[in-house]
Length: 96
Image (cartoon, one colour):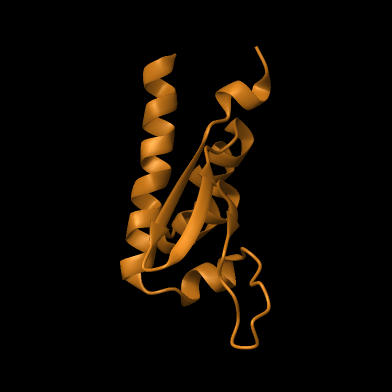
């Protein structure tokens, strides 16, 4: 079996923001558990899970997926992204 077969991705769109999400690797997940602050942990996990997005800055340049940029987004964008990462993880657990 190919690694790409088990590292499934999910594409979602929230308020016009298109995001492709992939499950965390084991080292990424374990590293996230060491982060005590829940907002910091969430931002870390999203940075690791987001494969790509269509966000641009005010000059039309693509915005990189960084913790700083994640923290700039409103909750109405972040919460569905968090839910989507949980769904990707849960769907992988059900298959195994």
